[in-house]
Image (cartoon, rainbow, N blue to C red; front, side):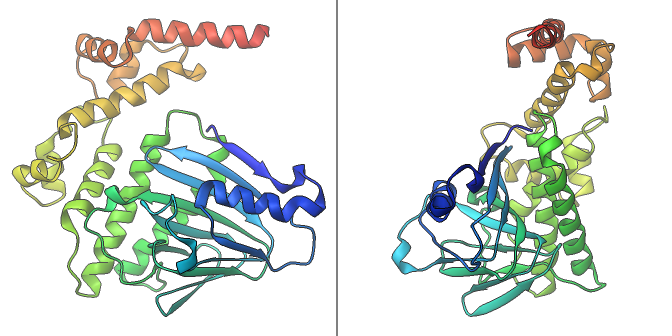
Length: 325
């Protein structure tokens, strides 16, 4: 998957602190960042656009990050922040709550409220910026941390943490074109986890936004099934078809169109990939839930301005040109 890589190793030792501050400002705004390590500041950041999400893999020595009232408005204020502790240990403090994170644990918080994060040893973090619109109706009274234990809530928290940790390891090697599918998986799991968490503590669940996340996760998981339907999604999520339509009524595209577009995205990525050079466009279409080759070709041309066959031939020519160069 395409990413932008930044590292302090590219500058002189005496300039590394300033360089790291500049990198952080570029993506997170003017937070207060300070190193807690006397050794040369050896840090790196990889930025990924994953569908609607922004993900950052960060490796850094012991450091402290804080936002207070002097920071003003930041470009990240339109996002919630989800942090997974991949290695090392961290402490997050916000709204008089202190949360300690060990490897595999995660936390979701609203970065508009003052907070601080302290990592007292070298660490690796997966930081995800989640657009607020994807969690409309969510109100966090403080940071929400992954729980441990053996009940349903802790189980879901653990599954989500394990998924994020595996994702952090696989992100660099994932092919382009899968960002939307990964985004939907992340948001679907997060939505299910939030629903269980709020239900457990007796707080109102932001049903429309959570249901939307779960519906998109269900679509992603069952996209290859030809009989996937809005009624089937409603039945699986235990709501009415009418209510499901209402949940998605503010989206630019209807739910049925979203299903077809998701299938088209998967087919386009498959047609472009060299491992599918021996498969016909029709075979790929059927594998992703299309029942009619003619229907697939018509929708594909509307979406991409070319036929599936032309797309496949263009990808092949591009690979041959790359080999010759």
